[in-house]
Image 1 (cartoon, rainbow, N blue to C red):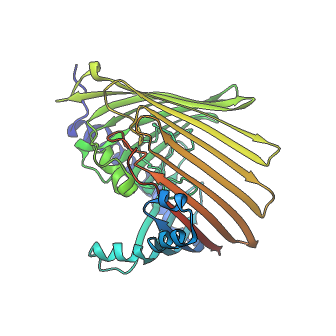
Image 2 (cartoon, rainbow, N blue to C red):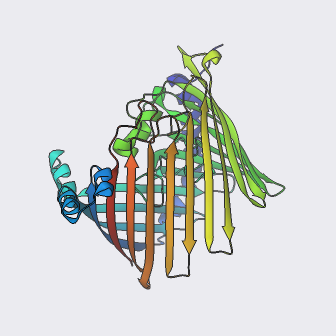
Length: 406
């Protein structure tokens, strides 16, 4: 049994219909482009100061002031001054341009790391997202870098093929990916979503579709995607050194379904399969499976708790960004009022004993100005299943963030 997912299929089934669509709608595109709707801008400036220790266990084991001082002398200061510029122009009901660009100036040891890369720039530049979208009665077309977040989980979402989790972000945000996207509404509560990567060659592309609907208060969806083998590189280019670069992913046909609803507490999950193929022939005997389950609950609008699990089964291709057999995540947040809140989360990988946790306290000083104190600790790489983390030193850091929005 052969699957027709090679370059010729991609050109005929994806690019040609898309080109015909653009040609057919070109008069409408020209009319929309002629409308001057301007751009709305917003900006956020932040400064992060971080003190980090390569072996936090030494800090915990200190039993005298002299030993404590000597341990502190072995740490490093680093941080970032970041300016984020967001813009949006046009009309969601016709055509719009959306973008977010981040400029970051590192200092301390972070500046030394940037200098070692040989970059001619004294700052970091990240184009988090920039895309154009056109809305028509029967279809919405988007092209560019955007966040395509299919998954229901806050952290574990194996169906998030395109947008990797940023583990350095306290909010666990996603990275943007260069894609072309067609969204077709089937009714007020159902639709079809087709997505394909733009940056990868066709034979390595990740593309496919997802259909979704809301039934009886439950959000349900089913998906089928082709991973030509470029998925690992796609996520590594955004996830950085914490990504699973040492574990290349073989081509596979990926499918499954997900759900989300309320059963006293919020309950959601995803179940997927990955069938590898070689020479465009499926190898069902090596099918891999992934199951993600999660629940969230709030108490009095003050306490918020989330628990998640992801399990990977069989020896076939692993799905998602977390490769171990058993992965756990817990999050607990407290909101005193509109001005003060605290957040914490812990990622624990049962197979390798790797873990990563953070505890933070936020205080809004005035309108759109916030200060945050936090402490983070990590041992090993929570994304990989390659090695045990038992003898790995615990990285410990303390940070201060000042942020102002405009």
